[in-house]
Image (cartoon, rainbow, N blue to C red; front, side, top):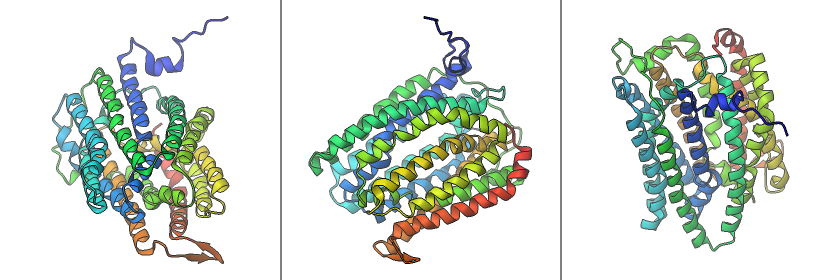
Length: 444
């Protein structure tokens, strides 16, 4: 049997080359994505919604618990000032990472054990998640600045993100299947026991973050670019807004993000209400990484041929159509229409993820990157907050109310998804008008 050479392999070059300290840095961030993915499977999405439902958190209450942590992310405004004169950031970043996950995972898990009143639980969980996101907002920019030092500088940045996505996807698929079996087993238990198991899953997820920190501590830090300009709080707004292409790209992305956030707090809850179990949602979660494995090479070729901006427009247009399909989901068709629409959305998302990840950096100047990233993160947080807040208020005001469109009965959540589809179409149309100008100046 012919022995396979690994040394020239792209994965070896990007992640596993022991003689290249930058490859280890990329591996550390790649491993971080693995640990976060594993931790998130049992603490977010369907498991998180099930955890809240078992603790008597209603769909309307879910809104507060969604938009409050999001708005807390605007603490990123202070990130450039915190890191501006700090040459060694690794220790601070690791402490911040542990604090964020301890509060958001363990702190939230302890709440049902200490308090029985659902309203007290809701407000305390919302506070803890918001506090954790304040920490994350301040320090997340430091991670992006650190990662940039390890990214390939030979024009293959999208290759790094693509292959990282494939490996994480395989890992995610395996763990999602495992999560499906775990969820199916939990659903057979009495409700009180189900709640206890979900609490222990949150507590256990923190263990993987500790492993993550140990791997990160071995990654090298390189000198960060220093600016002689004295930074003022208004510069976090002024410098990015003066950059025409960066401003246009980020504001367009923010509009899409706000539209997509409308159903953040209600969609999974709605799916469970119309008959989808969280074990089914967990099993379906194994599909995206498998599709990513198959379709990523093609998506990368299209990315290189068309460029980032044109790719993003192309895929977003298909995404809008899926949202219209989502709006048609009801108890009578959820068993077949949701899986069908979900699979189509995940096929489209393979290309979106590659383009969207690169889109952040394409129009970002080399100097004062942390300032530009903080502005981007702040705008993203505000956009998600605005969309989530408006969606939550819509549910509070119109929950349980029926609608009719062309004689077709719709629930309030279906109407909200229809509004989301329309707004996403508007945002994608605006991107279409701007794509030629942005594509002409993007840096790939």
